Amino acid sequence: MCNADELNGYLTALQQLIERAYYNNNHQRVYMITHSMGSPVTLYLLNHMTQAWKDKFIMGFISLAGVWGGALNRFV
Image 1 (cartoon, rainbow, N blue to C red):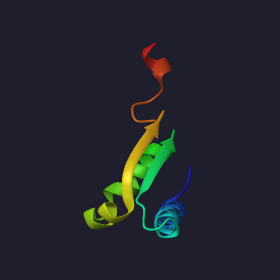
Image 2: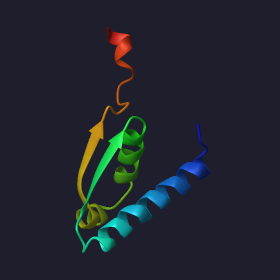
Image 3: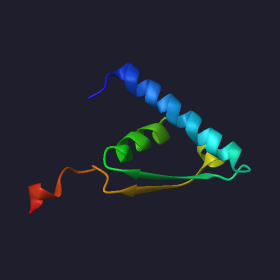
């Protein structure tokens, strides 16, 4: 588990990575593909960015096996 400062540092680095990918690829918007805990962390980032930022940099968000509702074993 990370603390708030570590999470903020990670989110800042992720934002910078997205922006670099956009600029390094001729201003093509970015598809974000996430897995497991990366899915809610990415959603947290997107929920805290302005709509203008998302419109400029993000083409889509694909979540693979995100931990949205807990483990499937709980329901089986």
